[in-house]
Length: 146
Ligand code: FES
Image (spheres, rainbow, N blue to C red):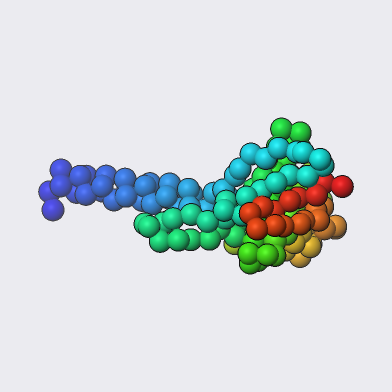
């Protein structure tokens, strides 16, 4: 292989790796919606958990809800159409923002792990995440703040 051809192939391989890394990052990034607080609750449409991938219907496990009044997002986990869990994504250790990682939550700062309902599974944190009660109707999930 000539030097010029080798360099050309190497660059194409690097470009391919960079692209696949970017795609993997975008695939793993959480889906975020903006919510508003009314009557001490936040309404989230159940339809936010559904999307199309190459025209195939897919279901998200997590939707993160941000509001202007609450500093960190609330993570809403979908078990099924009528069962959800809502957790405030502030680590109980030193208040970093925890992130969905598959079906659990992980703190990027020092590695604490929590279940999808916010139960502590691994320290250094020593307490569960704050969780919220929920109600649902046909269309919406309501996160109750009090
Ligand atoms: Fe989350 Fe330390 S802040 S483990």
